[in-house]
Length: 225
Image (cartoon, rainbow, N blue to C red):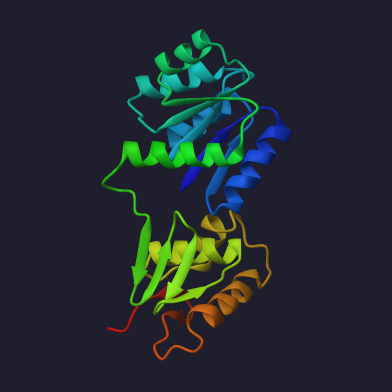
């Protein structure tokens, strides 16, 4: 999922962003309400995580403005303001959920999954398959031919992206922007290294390779024609 975190407390934002990325999500961060609104309007995002108290424009204003623009991306408020009236204000402003600080990160993840399922039940895919390769996005498990495969978090994110674009040619730029979140080429072999590691895990000991290098173009994950 692609998630936008709008939080001005840099330490709190770093905690949320790091946890979400380690869980395999693509995350953007805005540190004030104006920046958050601009990013949310440019989208698309699957979920917005919005702090109530923000500089320049508060979280209630951000979400209510999005709703006025007919943008229905699920929004979860994070706030130290936990009274009933505060939660009601958040929901009336267009929020879909309200989580009071401090909170357990596992609960935040669970609430995000519920919001996405509730907003697009027909579009949310929790299991991806290419040939005999299967990925369970909720359990974070990968298997091929019934054999479980252990992947590191970055390898899982790489495979998830490749699975969602199965049969297509995925370029280095696409991988850098969507898996590593670089909007420039860092001039390293990081992609080649991770592709090599992933190929060794999902193709080694299997007769039919799934991960292919397309010379001069990029990579493609596909089963045999």
